[in-house]
Image (cartoon, rainbow, N blue to C red; front, side, top):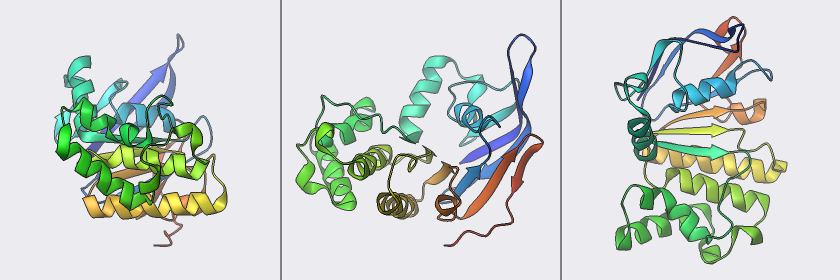
Length: 226
């Protein structure tokens, strides 16, 4: 599903190198965590994987497609169809109901009507918020907002899901519920997943843990708890 080949990225007039020679791969159904100190390049790595930026060298391949070989419009289409995103700040649209927020990726991919409604109903049941279908995001708790964000990321059955600090704004109980939901849904859909987090407890819900350090990406010696 994902192959990162010796990518490097530098910024600024002095070409400050943020990433250098990063390589790893991810198959369908694999779920990994990437940990690291602030400023080490975790967000840059996610942006490159998502095709929001292109590496100075090396390649990012999604299902065999080199993202750097696509123009902006083609990368946008690929992102909409094949990726899902979960953010720390939720990024739900307050003027849309819970159901319409979840359905948004389907609409962007041209899927509407009964097919879309059935998939939204399926996800609402999975996250335990059927009774909140018509609610505004402004009426939800933090944990509920993040469950809706997970549903939105998965509703179009993407092959790759990127979760950037999805529990950073949640209490311990809500965080545990969201992490369990994310893992169950990724495994059920056989989607590849990357969890970027500062939390070891969160990282231990994945299959494998990496640490991003100034000298590269390293497999962590801490074993996941699941």
